[in-house]
Image (cartoon, rainbow, N blue to C red):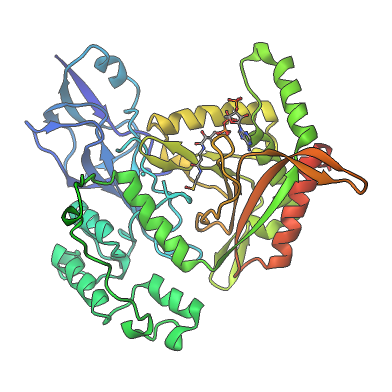
Length: 458
Ligand code: CAO
């Protein structure tokens, strides 16, 4: 038995955040990733998870205290020898997931901006998107608050908290408020913003804000007693999956997305990659196709800057930085680590950083900082298989590239069929920002870069 100090882990840009809820008390037995406290800044509230299993021996924070990375939260009695070392790490390794963001995202969607793929918990909006902010806006000036259990309940129902009026003390949203909102939506008396946007996009029944459920004409979700038909097993979704689900649904419903499919001839590129890896064998760093794709995408994003933007009302925020998210499959669900400043890095550095980020994702150790700020996302299924797919945009980004397994194919060279290695590309784009011709040009340029990588230097 040893007693360790559990500290606030890396919580990104959050500084001097106030403790608004204590979720454990002295004597409680806690599990790794169990939420200990809720903190709130002017932008978001988030739960801080526990790094270890153990019994709470002393609480070192009180309601209203301001905390930062490294602040001691509590003394925890743990079993096992590894614990004390971990405790000295200046903050636990556990990562945190913002549970709510305050301001509306550039696209006007609440909570879109913060990837809430809570690593290690047991999510990633990402899909694609990534990512992943969970829930709905909270904590912003003028916006109501809710306890973690109410937020969890709202997430499970898919209720956007930012749209619920709170009847509790100081406008706090209660369980009953969430239930009432959900009932009103089901009865067609209320639309969520997402549904209103879908109506507007579909031009259904008068468009956004017209407000009656009959416009959508949706019948209730089928309620089936599956056990009547055969043996079943119920598996609760993990936190990452639930957060992903909410974000994927919002992104799928709210973005008028179109996907263009194309093939890139990577015959020479793959030969170059294999040669580089042979020459660099001793370095221990393997240059991956995804690293080439990241560099090629940065070149295409520079040539077509609207693909590296976000919608902000009637304006487009075009970013002059190139942070590329990549979807990583993890035991807990999809996560989207972000490779920052990809334009400034070489292939070896990108390969190495990606491998480290992917490992962290699989181990549930990504920090919020490592999952935020992406300007464009790549989702590669190349190592697994398949021909094409339609990835979902990771809002507030406006495009995402899906990549599948390259395959030797006969290509007509004007005189004969030649065996060439073709890489299937699927580019999904937001039709509010990009049009079909631009998307086709983007894909064509990407294909040219991949076919002749010297173009990256142009
Ligand atoms: N075509 C053919 N083979 C490919 C390929 C492609 N496009 N991309 C990679 N490969 C091969 C590699 O050559 C390598 O083969 P060897 O083991 O024989 O060398 C193998 O696949 C693994 O490739 P890699 O080490 O380069 O890894 P990666 O970059 O392909 O994958 C990562 C890294 C993190 C993207 C991957 O682990 C992953 O999680 N992929 C899933 C992403 C996902 O789930 N997307 C869907 C999101 S929508 O739900």
